[in-house]
Image (cartoon, rainbow, N blue to C red; front, side, top):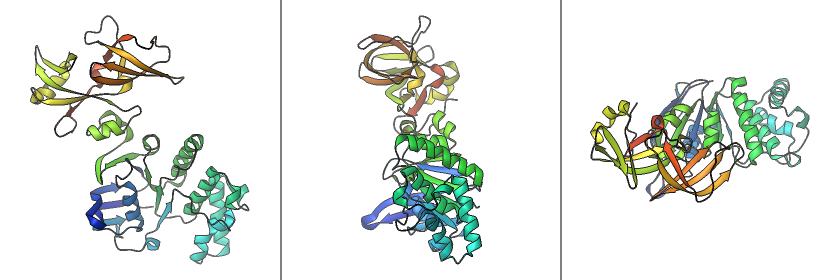
Length: 364
C-alpha cells in the first residue's frame, strides 16, 4: 500500500470553470479517508485526478512518494470502484473478476488464486458462475469491489459506490467496506455526498465546498469543532441551528438576538472579549436543546410547530420569534403541537462563529 499526497492541485474546465481550487492533503499509508460535500463541490473530480482519469491543470500528485501527475491510469497502481458497477454483462462473475488479470498476462494459477481469495473475502464464492443480470444490487457492488481487490493495488478509490442501493443495503455495504479496509489494511479514498457514510467509515474526513477543502480531521473532531459555518451546517442531521446575534457587555458578556439573550459562561468570556459589539452567529445542535426545568436561568419559550416521532427519539420543530429551531428529544418527552415549551441550550455545547468571516471562534 502507499500514501497519497496532493500538492496544490487545481482543475479548470472550459470557460474557466474551476472545479478544484488549490487542494492540498496527505492520505497516510493504510488510512481510510472520505471526501464529502454537496454536489459540485469537486470531490469526484479530485478522485478522478488521483486516478488519472482527469488531467491536472496545476499542482502535483504523488502515490507512495512517486510523482504520478502525468502517469497513465494503468501505471498508477490504483483500482477504482464506480457508482454504476461497470460490470461486463456477457461475462460471468468469475470472468469479470479475472478480466483485468488476463489483460496483464497473469498465469491461470495466479488468476484462480486471486479470484478465489477475493470471492472468499466478499462472500460471493457461490456467485462465480452467474451473470450480472442474475445478481442483486448489493451482489453486483460486491463484484465491483472484488474486481478492485484482485488487482492488489497500492490505493483503492471509491466514487459514491453505494448511491444506487436502497437504504438497508447501504447500511450493510457500509459495514462491509469498513470491514474490508481492516482485512486488507489498505489505503482507501472514498467519495460520498452522504455525511452518515463519511462519519461512520472514515479515519479522517475531508469536507469540501466550491472546489476547496473546508476542514480535514477525524469525524468526531469535525462534529464537535466545525471550522466554519459551512462545515457546521453540513455535518450533522438534522443540521445545526444558527442564530444571528451579537456579543454585549453586562455583568460579564451576553449573547443577544431578537427575542432573547443569555449570559456567556465564565470560561468562555476571555475568548469572546474581542467580539463585544460585533455580529456573531450562535450554533446549537438539535441534541443540545432540551426542555427547561425550574432551575434553568437562561431558558425561553418556543412554539411547537411539528413533531416527528422516530421511535428512538423525537424531532421537534420550534418557533421562537423570528427563529426556527430543530430539537432532538428523548422519545418519552411530554410535548404537544402548539405548546409554548420552555427550552434551554446546553451551555457547554454552544458554538460561536464570526458573522463576517464565518470562521469558528475558538472558545475552548
